[in-house]
Length: 90
Ligand SMILES: [Zn+2]
Image 1 (cartoon, rainbow, N blue to C red):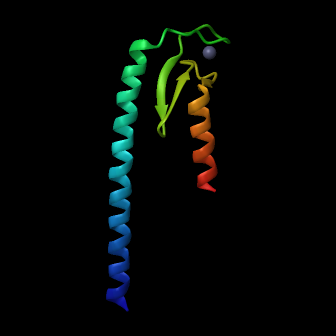
Image 2: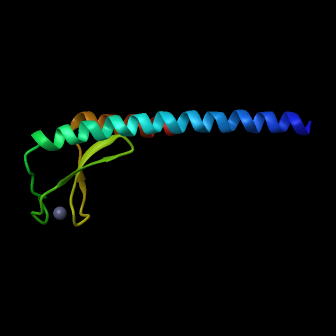
């Protein structure tokens, strides 16, 4: 019983490790995309405070974030991806 429990924990740990590597790969892809995007993205001013929005990737979702924290702007594919990931978490 005890060793069975241990094996199960071991399997779970492996799953976590695999998920972490997957996450890391996705994060790296997102960072590459973000750096490409930064190069071609024109500077956009926040409609509220007129500060230049900063490109940012959160959980693999690319967005333009107001540096004063007033909000974030997502293009349609990013918004769709966000909604999809929200749905799948339920
Ligand atoms: Zn702002």
